[in-house]
Length: 276
Image (cartoon, rainbow, N blue to C red; front, side):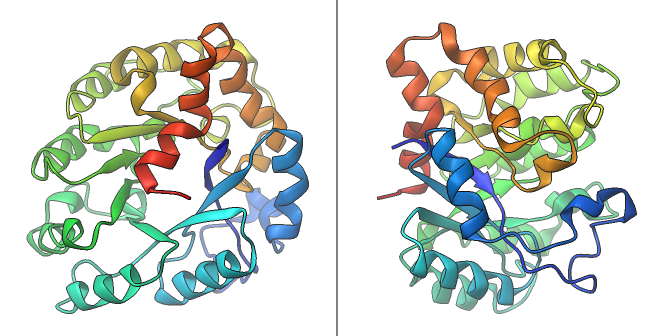
């Protein structure tokens, strides 16, 4: 299958989606399955993974309901409060839904740069493997050293790094991001999503070459068996069309073999999330 491994749905609420500021007016509306289907079809995708955009269990229920009504939504990445005493109970509950494949916490918004290493958070993360759930690591590039320690604490837990850890593509800053990526990639239980790059570039004013050195680093560090494509729609609309965001990766991997391209374009996501 060809899988868009990272996208979002929402019914816009200024109360719930406070992260959508005045510079992001294009996102201040509903984005639902009927909006995504034609975009996916034009880009050759068979399915997608819907990822939480609001840290609430209500978000889980919303996404699971959409997945139940739309077969092309192959999996959901949700949220629970890993720091709560009942984190295990909530994970057990959501693991009972066939399309709930993993969890995520918006660590990039936490004021404490050491959030990932908090005892209560680590305790909650330690419960994921029991329920066969993956974890999406959402951070900024400054968090990579901490994330490397975090991933190393759970060598048997499947992790995936969202948005290549959000390097400063707009400023074309390469180090220490590159060195930190090479180090964290040594953990073989970690995969990487080539997604979210256009929003780290100059919005609407980038050129394809702006991404090359970052993609070179990711593909060298992780290899084609541990990389998956994601559109990050509709957030990508801040800087590109759906097709434009996807085309960056498609063009980059065009020189690879068909088998290798298939892995990046869906095979790896299918295996990682256990999609059917």
